Image 1 (cartoon, helix red, strand yellow):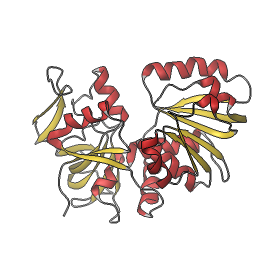
Image 2 (cartoon, one colour):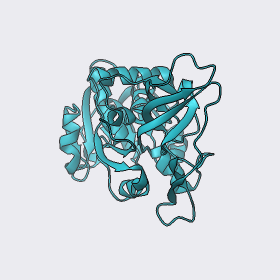
Image 3 (cartoon, one colour):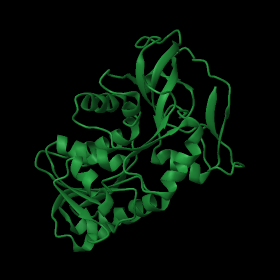
Length: 315
């Protein structure tokens, strides 16, 4: 089969499009023909650091059709359309086929295309876990989302609105329209207005993939509320853990979150998407052979939402 593997000698983003052996499912696994996958910050960071998955194939988010199943698989059969979140199952999504435990998959509703389905898993569940699990979001919460136009950010806006929050998104001017379309009540251009200039009093602040002033964010919080950092470089995460711990004495807390695979959360996200309550913001699609170009695009441009790797054209 064709796949994109990590190759540190490659001049194309250390990625090589080549032939590899097609996997076979173990007794608890599915073999899935991948129709679409999407790139996440986890893929990008691992590539930057030179830490590929064991099979050297990145890609946590996939959507496709089950080709065969292991003898102990009970909930899936050949021909089923599925969505997978493979970050705890070895990755492997940037390939024509992938094998993983059935626990990494859910059934894909007919209402969702493979492209839209592949854009959901990791980014949307990260947003959900940040807002609901760490942020204790509630009806009427005043929420500030810094970095509201990326994959996680666009879902965070929509999920916050689903829970009845009043949402302020912070992004560049070119992404203001998208953030409003996702449901934000107010949008701030961070190139014109600095965090320190915001006159706010928030129940929850979510900062996505960036280095934001923790002291300023703390000042913008109401008592007994949280600032949550999502993603970012290792230096950003380290800073949030160390400095955030020192700043968290008192009622205002500063924490970071790394999404954890949770099949119930994925089912919930897929249900919201199938009902039209959230929708992926997709920036661009690339073919499997152009995966290196897709990573370059993410590195050089600030993608407005998700970047898709399209492997099979849907009918």
